[in-house]
Length: 67
Image (cartoon, rainbow, N blue to C red):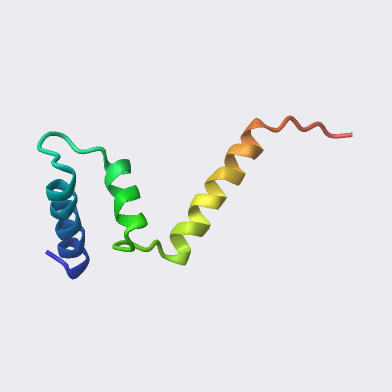
């Protein structure tokens, strides 16, 4: 497993022990927990991709006509 994979595995295990989760985990809950504790910081590219997704959604909802 890569160093990144080991890091993710470590904070998932920490989440489980701190929260007491023993069943299925919600990836969004784990991600929010890790982010708030500074365990995982998104890359600049990840942030740009998320913003671009929001912009693309706006474009899909926008109605345009040609003059």
